[in-house]
Image (cartoon, rainbow, N blue to C red; front, side):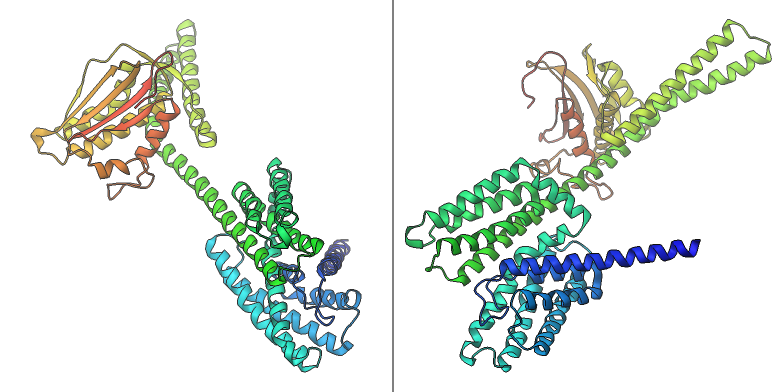
Length: 535
């Protein structure tokens, strides 16, 4: 039974491979037929030849086994599209040469780019472009030499045939290969589907049609003066949708350029000019799309890094929060044991157990908040007095101040209640205090002071000031102070202050650093009403 099952799986896999090969041949021949225009001497020397891009993608996906369906696709195209313009054996030799030549290009791409996306970043983009341009140059030279030696091209037309074949294949691959590559993988198809279903695609599609009309239908005597307008839809697509939008625009718009030029019969424009326009349009779109995708990846990675760093900063505050309920649980548990040992089963024992349940819920709430922060960065606002907030943030620094001979002073604070996430604001205050401790430790022992004060300004903002007797900030330091990964400490990651400012801004406030000759930071928070902008 198991042998039959294994055989059926193998047969299913083989059938699927044969079906994929047939689908590839059918698509290859269809694209070849649609783009077979202005052939030279009936050969596959055209100004626009995208089918090799499809073969390159198949080879990159499945390796050298792709040579067989690719060879079959070329022979079928020669039979159905070009009706065998050369003897059969010579046609077979030319087809085999094309498979070997372009298969070599695919192997070069595989070696240089590995298994990453073809246009994963700017370096891959430039490497891909260089390989396509140079390798198609060599392949085209050898192909034209073969057909010339066979007497299929007059000697005086060799250079023209070579230029047309090379540029046609090169441009066809550059313009269409990224689209075929994305379409060949699941994630790529999802990106293309998302882009195509966007209203933005309809917008730049209509813009593309309008620009084609302006460039070809509105030009005086076919001078093609307004070609630069065609860059607008490509730039729009790439800037809004990254590589997916660029691949769609680059696949459709250059095709529209060639069709439009043929439709209006612009004899003043050489085919080479149209080819170069299509290639440049595609490359500009791909470059912008790759940059946009890179920026999005870096932004997502930075957000994740900042979130993990912020979670690390919050760990101390959460540990402090958990310490109290866990200590209470331990005390109530010991009390319950003593009560049971004394035979107490009445109201006193029930009250102790109830208190244990309350403290366990409190501990669970702290853990839940940590989990929610890891998942979504969510905050939980609660009402807390300013005095309680400052006391909670400074509690762990009192012993440290005595050990380092630091005079930690706290002024009388305004009697105000804030609506904040206490854990997050405590993280901010602790980070600022930690920086202040590091700064004053560079001072003489008799001049180590940290001063905490707060007041309500005229615009009804609460300003918490943490001032120290350290050397303070220079103007140059202040300019980059809140940049991520920029730190003046050899052991610092440069994330504390950016995270702190992000937390305060999420509460509707601001974190300010003053350049006044010594250390001074201000945490600006709203207290009630709608205060004016913090500055």
